[in-house]
Image (cartoon, rainbow, N blue to C red; front, side, top):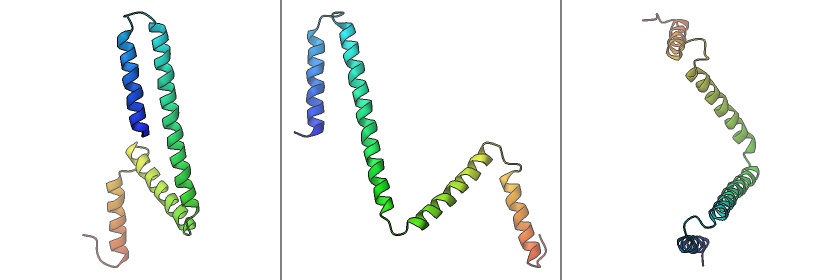
Length: 115
């Protein structure tokens, strides 16, 4: 029996048990059980994500091009940081104005007049 089938059968049993109980009887116990199951589900999900992240980290550490990978990551994070500060309005100037000024400087430094 797979984990999914096991989870589905446990869920069906829980639903059947809740239907058999009279309304209001054991509601505190039922809510405590629900909270416990939710907490266990969240913990299982978190551990699964942690396991997957650890596996990815081990795979990354085994790479021969780790230095280049880290360099690319730093460059990417820097670019993301620049974009985030511009988006948040923390940059001093408008991005398009800055790019236009750079283009104008580039064309005048090459000896061609700026149009």
